[in-house]
Length: 125
Image (cartoon, rainbow, N blue to C red; front, top):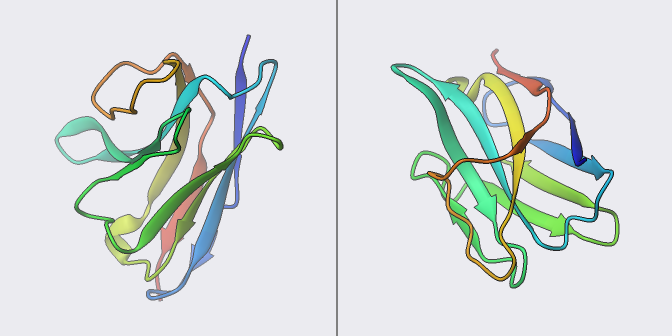
């Protein structure tokens, strides 16, 4: 069973930065696509970013493009989300999730099978 634990959230001023981590245990992440999600008004959640397993190809929502960077370190079984130039509207509980899709590109709209408990990001002056 794959387990995911997020960390790195906190309170930051607008324009500041945070790096979220998603640490996996129980299975190696090599064949898993990983996504970061947050709740959004009017829908269950918003896909923020994802990274593919084989070629580490990335995808970003328009709302974070150019500000967030997702990366993975399979040796550490961890995925990161570097968040720069944070805005108050980025305030949310951020979840990482995993789905096993060997050699397939990540997609934020599909069902992810494993979820962490979330880490809170608050952007406020």
